[in-house]
Amino acid sequence: MKEEDFDLIKISKYLSLILRHKPDVIGIKLDNQGWADVRKLLDGISKKYPIDFSILKKIVISDNKQRYSFNEDETKIRANQGHSIQVDVELLEIEPPAILYHGTAKNFTSSIDSKGLISKNRLYVHLSTNKDTAKNVGMRHGEPIIYQVDARQMYIDGWIFYLSANGVWLTKAVPPKYLTKCC
Ligand code: HQG
Image (cartoon, rainbow, N blue to C red; front, side, top):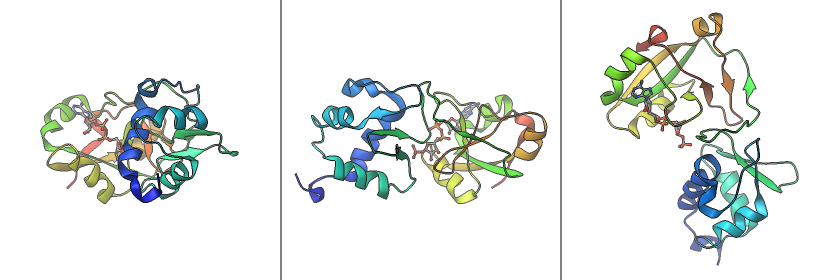
């Protein structure tokens, strides 16, 4: 099949499912660093989407959030963040900006106000440097609301922050005292 015959966004969503949550849906395993073997991935995916390497590469390059990376010789692929399964994607541990943002749905605020942000099914709470990104993330769950995170104080207090290869800030949890509803 030719590239124009495929819905690349649909395939990208399927890739997210495989590379972040359920590699077993196509009968593959990820290694400890979250890598999948490209050949096995293409084989596994082909029952649903018979794509070749060039289409996979196009998805990786054109992804609007740069969700995936190849290793150097393009024999392996992984998701840069967002996992629910236990993998170590070699995140960069660095000092965060003073303020970060988290977008969520209004329905979740009473729980968040009492328990803080928890990572739920994922390995980390996802944070961003800008409000627009946070708002878009929040809209996925309902009427959006944005929390401002006092990342500077968290860092001073010993919380660890990571920056993913595609620019998402991650931390294990955010207790309520570091949160302010902002907009
Ligand atoms: C909420 C997308 C109740 C949290 C995005 C969120 C992101 C609580 C939801 C990435 C809570 C979890 C992650 C508490 C947190 N009580 N609700 N105590 N603590 N929550 O999807 O951050 O497009 O696991 O606010 O862009 O929405 O997939 O996390 O609303 O970067 O690449 O529980 O996924 O990226 O939802 O999204 P999620 P998220 P992709």
